[in-house]
Length: 212
Image (cartoon, rainbow, N blue to C red; front, side, top):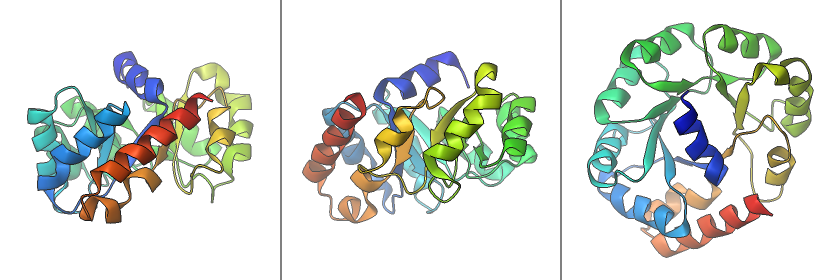
C-alpha cells in the first residue's frame, strides 16, 4: 500500500464499508460522506452493483478515494481495478488474490486474524492489513498483543467487524491502527432509503469521535 493512500486513510481514521444495491445512489452517497468531511469509501463486492458504483465515483467524484472490498478472487481484483478502484481489501489472506492485485497495480490490504497470517502478509509485501473479524478475533486486546512482535515491522491495521461507537476508541488508541472500518454510519437501509442527511450526520459524529 502506498504512503499516499495510507496517509488519506489515516487522516479520517475511519473507512466506511458500504454495501450498495443501486449504483445510481453512489454519487449521492459520496456527496453525503464528503459533506461530513470524509473522503474515503470502500464499496464491497457483495452486490452486482459494486463495479458500476466504483466506476461512477471514479469518473464523477475524483476527490474521493474509492476502494473495493470483499475481493475474494483474482477476477474480482481485475474488475475492481478496471472500474477505477484505487485500493482493494479482502476479509482473508489468499496469496493468489494478493498476487493478482500486485500484477494489476492495485494497492491491497488482505485480511488477517492470527500471527501466522500477519507474517504471511508481510512476506507478500502487504504493509497495511485488515484485522477481521475484529471483535470476534479477540478485539483490541488481540491487536495490542500482535503489536508486541510485529510493531517494529511497520505493519498497520484496519480493524473491521463488530466495531461501533461504543468500542471504536479501544482500537484507535493503538499505535498499529491506521483506521477502523465500519458500517453503522452507512447502513444499507439508510442508503436504500436515500437518507443522505442521516448518513452525513452519523459520519460527522463518527469523525468527531475519532479525533477525541
